[in-house]
Length: 217
Image 1 (cartoon, rainbow, N blue to C red):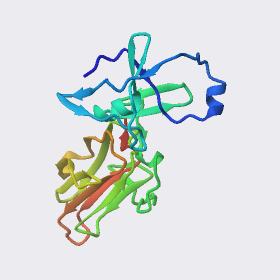
Image 2: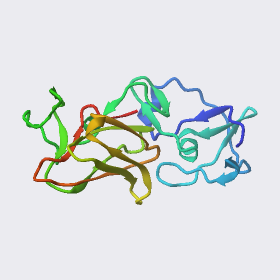
Image 3: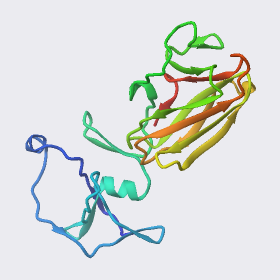
């Protein structure tokens, strides 16, 4: 891959933001001759809208758009306005999945949100169906999903797929596992779907997924 001596950040900030920022005007050149290869394969750099973006050459250095490079390398990228920082890969602090979206199927009844005497406050709990699914929306901002789940009785077969049905992770959860943490690489994913399946025996089996301790990084 082309040697990168700098990264330009294209996050669609408004003109008002630039007006008050600590910026210095320069004269640079769009360099259409630069090609980028990842693992030997040429890739086309695209912005968030899917439009082609071109490397910039300035003072002998080549600058590539941060989001396009992150996408090509399958690394999550986000922007923290509070610290004016571009974030690549995992974040330092985990973000609970229920802080990112609202779950219509979530249970908040204190009588049903406890597992081994700990109250998780908001959970996905299913003891009725033999299996079902729910969606998570990381919106391409996170590198890894740490999904916690417990089997209530019989083993639970669990898998995580992307929007195109591509398998990202598959695992089996047993009652002996307790609350098991399943790590899934979700870089570049707008949405992932969690499928689960278990043997239903008159409500004695099921799945328990705490939404407050399942998190993104």
